[in-house]
Amino acid sequence: MDKWRFAVPAGVTDWAIAVGVAALQLGTGLSGPHPAGGRELLGSALLAVGGLALAARRRSPLVVLAVTGLSAVGYLGAGFEVLAVSYLVAVYGAVCAGHRAVTLAASMGLLAVLHLTALMSRDGPAREIVTQARNTLEIAWLIAAFAAGEAVRQAERRADEAEHTREETARRRADEERLRIARELHDSLTHQISVIKVQSEVAVHVARRRGEQVPEALLAIQEAGREASRELRATLEALRDDDTTPPPGLDHIPNLVKRFQTTGLETTLTIEGQPQPVPAAVGRTAYRIVQESLTNVARHAAATAASVLIDYRPDALAIRVDDNGKATLHPAPTPGLGLLGMRERVTALGGGLRTEPRSTGGFTVQAELPTNGAS
Image (cartoon, rainbow, N blue to C red; front, side):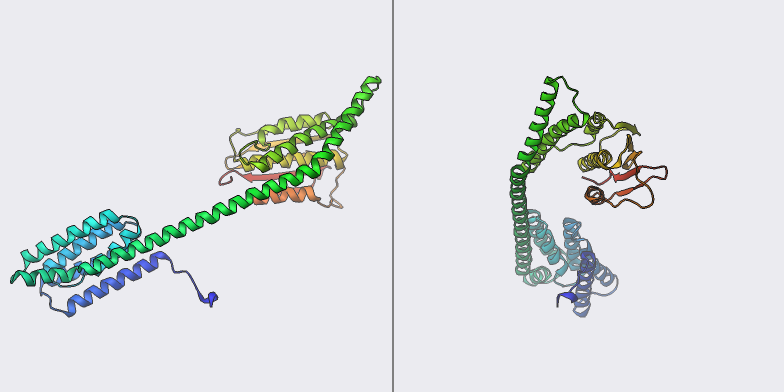
């Protein structure tokens, strides 16, 4: 049965109600006792206007309340005795929107004005004139419309509170999952990285005490261990609390390039365009792209030089990392997990990523991250 359900736009529903109420009021007014000539035309127009005004009840509930009330006064003065259905619907809409006090005051004022209008425009016993005014706006119908609007408003408020509660529950579960992941990472990685860091520092210390030249590879391992410890600590803190230590972003790329220069890789950084603030997610992704690209160059490319280009564009941030390694067009290298992770990060931001061997030799990584609407 669900597959046959479809959502009707609110505007269509409002217009359908407005046209229906206008037709109902016109039909009731013209089928019963009513004046002729110009008063008939005026009263008919006010009956139609009062109904059609309901099409705007969601956007301007108080304006619609005023228009429907004035139209009821007008067609009563013109000689029509028709229940103000349009005003009752407007009362319902205004109370749903939260305008209870204004609606109550307007309704009390309208009841008084309707009685005065009937007394001024009709001849006959006062009892009959008051009855004609009461036929235009029955107090019982008015109370029912007010109560219905208040009931719907309370139901919507409870639904909003329930939705807020569900969001809070989901947020709490996400926090608990982050803490669990943080504990798992701490238990599984911290010890191994600490061992690597300590062993490399001991090896460097022993070599220097013996007066031997410390190999560049050993120094690179020592620095990588320190950096891994810092990044792991920052990651664990970010998992425990999103607002504590922010992960590295664009501002950390120059230091990242310097660290790779100490490994013997001739690395250059070029910044083009006018530097400007970018969303945090864009900055984090840019840093990870450069980090992963340079790591791949140092590990797999057998390259001696790499260049990093950061280009600030009006609506995007472009990153390009090139190297002079041994990658060739044929056969193209198979992308590893690092490149796949890069692509996932870029795609999540709505950007584009291109990774391929260069025609002149080496490999290139090019990414474009939109800076509008990212977060």
